[in-house]
Image (cartoon, rainbow, N blue to C red; front, side, top):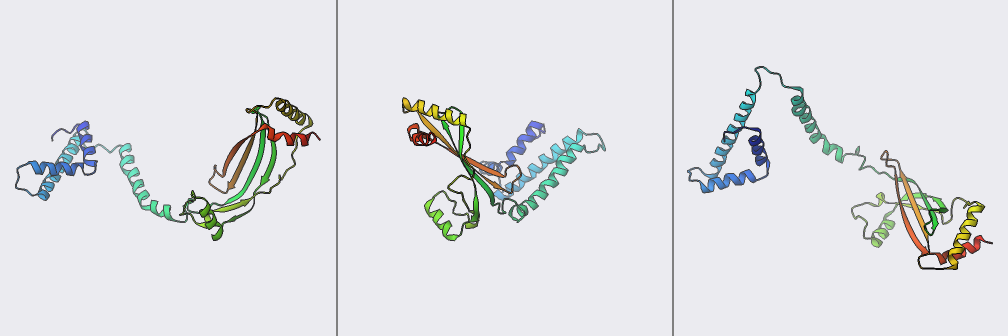
Length: 246
């Protein structure tokens, strides 16, 4: 193999880098060739041929440079700085990954949370907030609570430890008074009664339950939140409207 063009050179490198492909080629050559060399001697001969080709294209590349030409900055950066950085990364990565300074291995407990419930009438875009509560009594699960949790829910990762779970409580009543202006309340009652006069299956009220939990880290992602939307028939909302009319 005498061609040392860029295409042939990189094809050779890629072919040599594919696991076991070069070895299969060498074994196949030895199998179909008449030779007095055993397989291991054939491998040595092939290695010698490979190194000769490697030295040839390196020599041809050097011919393109002028005598005493200094290595350019880009080559020093690619083969010097990045290579050293890669070696340092290979050495330190396992230490950083499994040590206590790895933030993913340190406990990141919940330090606060909130729960809110609001409703919307017939998807008209107007949301009425009726419940707000903050989390309290945050603590890690003990062994019995963890056992009850893993027994009740199959999605719990068995490799997680009890100390990695937390329990939060919310009051069954809102922590804030429900405040709604008189015109807004009158409009809610009027719209609801108008819909109830001609009831249909499409009439519904939408409840939106939102929750969020706060942690100390990571920066920019300290809050985890979610929501659940529940649709109920509008007729179930009638007792609430009757109470508001009193």
